[in-house]
Image 1 (cartoon, rainbow, N blue to C red):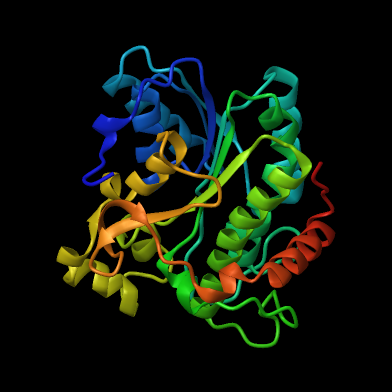
Image 2: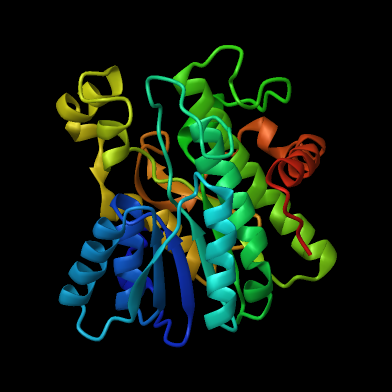
Length: 304
């Protein structure tokens, strides 16, 4: 595993993948998988951005099998519609990479369904998406689901009394909660897949600190994190390096169900893929089971 890069990806011809997010980590993940022979469905809210990403990948990799599909994770109706469209055109799905995200908007915003934006997009949207695509995944060949967390999950806590930050919105705690939830979802999905015989391998990954648009565009260029991105650039690794833990989880024969992968250097800020440290709350099966049930009620979806 030491020094694992995209050169270590085995040829993936015949596999299909859905990747959420058309820029940054999503783009780099799609580019690497398309180069490895995966048929990629790149899903995002902005059609112009998605079409541009697909065009650049096709130009760099002649013969790449990649297409854009519209998906707005801030709308459960859009998520359900995406699931219906894929179900009508695809008989199976081998990879689902829950990647797209929103990071620390300075003011509280809501999704179309009334959820705090980070909670709704980063976590609930992907929770519902996975449920809608479960039948396709169960038809896949050695299907895997990779959910993106963050080192911010280390400071997160699941506040069941105020999941939507309605009582007092603080950008980073809300972001940390959403990313802890993504991590807990990945681990709980693996446990439930094993118990129910779904045949799905679920893992989580985080990119360390990478040069993507999230830090710059989320809280704003003049925010503390925006200025850190600009002036402490040497701490940030390129997006293609940040995508490596995700790609390792998605493709490596050595990646295991229930695994969590991140960079191996500087307290997981940067480096090559390696097992990541789990926050204690992420390993609490009771909280994870409660979170699962609450999430099904909030999204009105059911697994299995």
